[in-house]
Image (tube, rainbow, N blue to C red):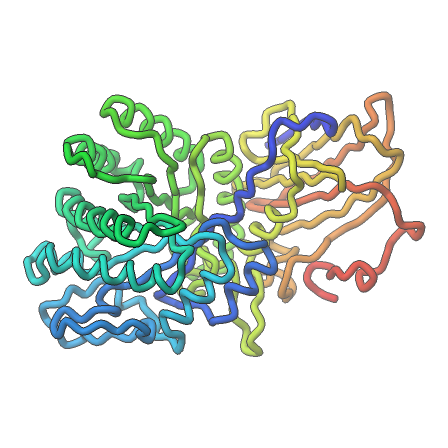
Length: 476
């Protein structure tokens, strides 16, 4: 397999979208209180951070009591035969309380997408009435919106057709969605928020395996003749080893909303993974390489935003997805997934023109500080990469390489490291009539690499890592 791309350093095609700024958190393995600040420092503030409030933890249907600062992950329904099991079996109790979790994320992101889930099954069975559900949803949104004004997006339910998330059909989901819409509308009218609340759905997984369910949701929207019907975004999830499914979904969705007369709104792929949920250490690199390819693809699909799953999760069964691990000494250590986000953050301001078949495996960017090129190999075979950067306005450049594969910048399968580090650096003369440099390498299976090409400034051939405040493969 070979990827050969010619890059015009003098021709920007657009401002590069900061794709790494759409992120996910979890409550099933809640992050420490200082993690959002750490993530923001390493990657910049997320534009949208997806956060959670679990309705059965904040409100007890048996007593009508609210627990506004509940301890995350403590199951008070273990012996209750009327309460659905949901995903309590995979939830780890935390010392963190919900207001600490939300406050930390709110402080370190621009906007919050707040998912409200549970009580799906109880409302379907009539244990909790729809009127009561609507009342609770309204009170919960109002309470946390008052505390955290940058809560903007509301997403009722999560993958609610799965038994562990309620096991309800699309018809009942739409009843819950409608009730949440009413709550959002009243809150906006009552408070006239500086950042008004928006709402969307359906947050279902594997749409391209079950497209009829997506069609059912869109049909429900189209059939709803209430003039106050509200939808501000569509949301879906995908965990699959074929990133091109995102384009197939995008085209299908747009054909259907056009047919049904529905609005063209942002699509939040607010959970995405290239692998399945596993505790397999080698799956972290595999997932990261595929997530990069899917994100590259999504930038050619206007309005689609991919939220990788997940910034921090339980390594025992979600090592494939978690970006960071918590070490015994309290430090956070990046996995290949975290390093992929770090490399996206290191891309430059403008996307450059590329000629050649890259199959959404290469992105080239540049600005006044230099150029950054990122290549990924989401396959189980080595991939040759030839990058030809042309029309460089300098006589000499310094090229810095950050390689991530089974050996480099991968504490799970290679030498122990805690953060992304450079793997090579060299100086090179810009040559030929086209004023260029060539980079030729082979990416190992599921490997990815970023190269920085910057004006040569340092008189010594190899500045020390200490002087650069950098590490080599994560080691000082």
